[in-house]
Image (cartoon, rainbow, N blue to C red):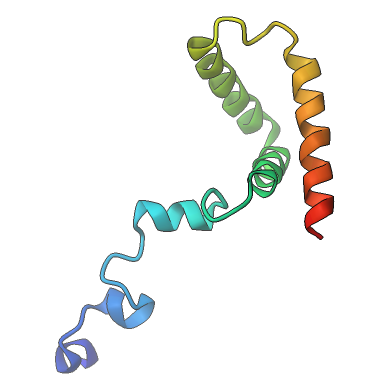
Length: 97
């Protein structure tokens, strides 16, 4: 009744937006928009580490297969590059504090 009296939708009353679950809002909620690269990287690592082991493994298999599909040399030196990228991102995060 309140929404009818105000001629607004329930979503607008609650969220201040008729469509509060836009894709861009999902990116903000999931930490993939308006974040520096190191923060997004840390968020992704945290999510994977927090997920159930079988879910994290499935997500990693999918992501690795996608990466291999776009970069045929993905596996060559991947662990060394991954380690260095993690250290670089950690240094960037420390600088932001």
